[in-house]
Image 1 (cartoon, rainbow, N blue to C red):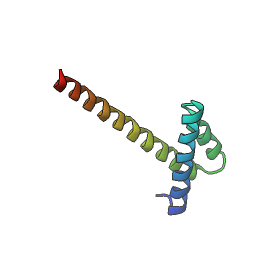
Image 2 (spheres, helix red, strand yellow; image 1 turned 90 degrees about the vertical axis):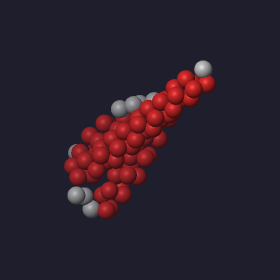
Image 3 (tube, rainbow, N blue to C red; image 1 turned 135 degrees about the vertical axis):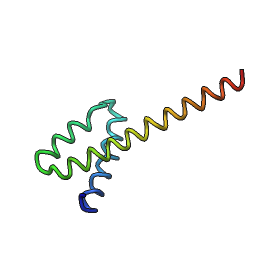
Length: 78
């Protein structure tokens, strides 16, 4: 397990990277950032990629639930 400083750095970098991705539309920017990190710190690279993946998975799951709820409410109102 990475130490708290590495996790904190990875989390902050993940948030910033996702914000840049959203603004620029570069959906795979995080992979490029991961490569840059991997060249100097595999530990930070792994923590960053984990932070990115968990946030992306969370966003996907929340979107899925929102769609399900809209579908349900649409059927209930029909």
